[in-house]
Length: 362
Image 1 (cartoon, one colour):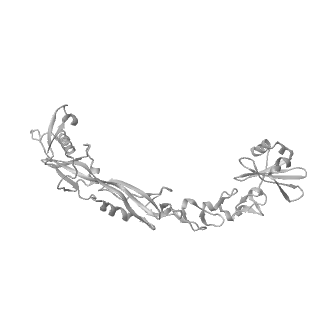
Image 2: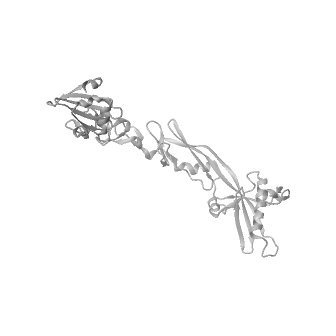
Image 3: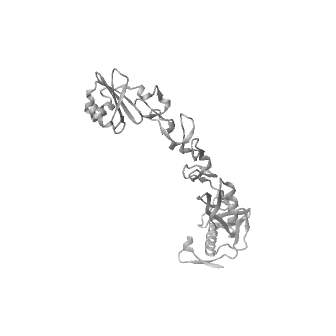
């Protein structure tokens, strides 16, 4: 079949047309490319392990993409080069990747693309003329053989289902080079070919799952912590962070400090007191923590001296006068009372008082 091609579209003079025939152009395809959805499935599915679930194809297309092989017969042999559908010359790495040199002949063109083939054929002939010219100045033109090369491009998605939930994994690549892509866990970012489900049904990378020693639930490793008291690997939700040691501790393992009445790790406690309460520092007049207290409660100046300790959550002030003592456990951010107690300097006993009486006892 013959087609008109505008030379202006090909870099030639405007308004001039030539006739290009596509009848003698052979249709080829790479030997090693996948040609059916069944073959795509056979290549993909064996790569994945789905614990107590299954995988299936949730859509797949194999589109034919046009290339052109240009064979130039010269005295010293035949030289080949390839063009893509935009008439860009392919480098050798792409030619090898797509297997264009290892091909077979098709009985007919898989697509109606005569116009595109004719356009590429004319551009190819001009490239040959520009690169090879005539033969040794004899005026003879090089013999050129053109072939339409059809490569399949695969795209679609795999669907992995476990229980009532499913996740999709898209893929897109040349059918000659298509390989199973790794699943990227949406929660951890881990790449994997082994999928499993947590106890709450999330489909994740199986390598990122561990069992909580306390509850027996299957959870993401990033949601588990080591309890520094029991040594168990447990859900973060079952723990508290000790304000003194800054370590994760199972809530049921936490104890109350007898002095500040804060929940702390038993590892920080000796003689019923946490390490913060055991090691207070004398508060200098310019100590910013004492300054905050005096600004918020000016009557605190009535006490002769103060010591201060702190945890991640509270400031612990101990004030002393001639005969009395006072203990203030205040929220570190707001200075709201968490625990108040008064006592005598001549007795180890403390008496807890209501938070509302802070200004009164100061």
